[in-house]
Image (cartoon, rainbow, N blue to C red; front, side, top):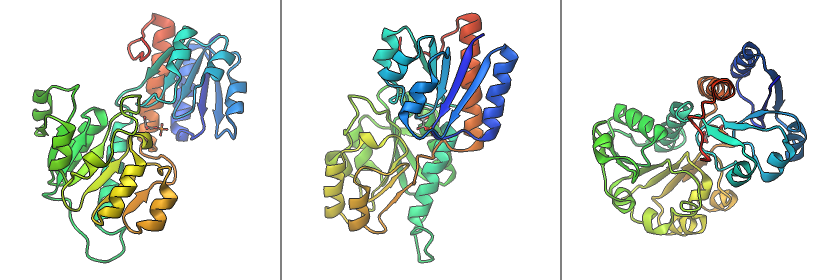
Length: 307
Ligand code: 3PG
């Protein structure tokens, strides 16, 4: 009997867990749940005899993979898989998948929600500003970026995007202005919504050159990964430009410094929560277990990311 472990330091909504368990039972698999674990070692200890693991931002290190002697597949219920050691997985013939698109709307809603929050001074009762007719640049036009575009258009914003991996015609078909470079995007848009993955090429790639070129009342919205920001350069820019604000889903490493120096010009969620809705948890969690069943029963590896 296949054994499936759901290891979520930040738990799914109960509805998602029930759904995953039901699909497991239906397939004749054993279901094991490890939630809110305190130490990484608890995760390592739980994998000894499992065939599949469903995770969120949980760290699947080489140690986890090596401890999981029967492991065949890891599914990251979500988009970014920078928390999985792909080389270690590949070395041990472990398939790694994500569930693209399943939690994107939740992340996009949070991005726009944080923008409204900042534009209205953190709901402090004083006069704020509106999003209507302001420009927003979407940096990477994947699943989340596309939802951000749709919602921003609803607000009456002027929406631009840059993505070197998506054809300009596809972006323009959504009524979004496709720009040719990140440089052009940042210098054209008051708001920038970041949706690039964290990898060796993108880490610390968003620094003073791009951010400093943004128009007056610039606002950077980061629901991607904190690692893509060059924090030292952003701090320098915040000191130079009083009109620059930073919104991030998860606090940057320099959060205390920002809080001490730039009051009212930032907002950070206490815990990464862009994808933390019942709907996103159910969509991503069920997709994850269904992908595992499809692989075990039919050899389907459609969403494999370590090919
Ligand atoms: C993702 O990459 O899917 C999001 O960052 C959500 O991450 P989470 O599952 O840890 O909330």
